[in-house]
Image 1 (tube, rainbow, N blue to C red):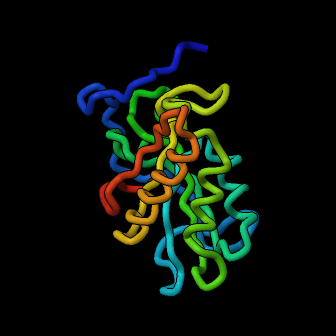
Image 2: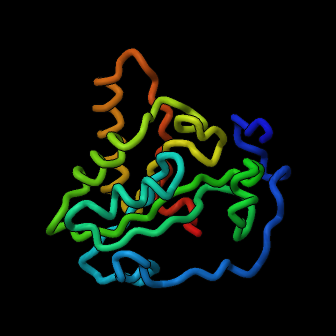
Length: 179
């Protein structure tokens, strides 16, 4: 195994990717729910990066009120990247989980609590033994209200972890595409 990059690549250094999107199921294998938009109007979505997306996804889908989860990539330069391309660290993408929930059954604050408490947001480009830019901590809101609440939650958790710097990125809502 080679050393994984610990800084994001430049757009010019990323592989170009491809025009065709990867084929994925629109039905969650475990939950049996729809995993791709459009979702029912009463549901909210937000995307989270906490390291490897497989364990993260399972943690979120176990929350009462979560309708569906799906794994993918966000925030990179390569068009329609493959898993191997993302794992190389050359695309700039982050491994993430899109969470779809019913706000009448679970609050965004509860979703954020699961996010903050399911990983170490101070580890920079990695989580535990998983090292590389694709394992960074991130919140990718889909609304301005989510962005505001996410930024406030980061401040609250940073106050609690005063001796360690949180490295979680919070992107402007609507600024990144989920694959």
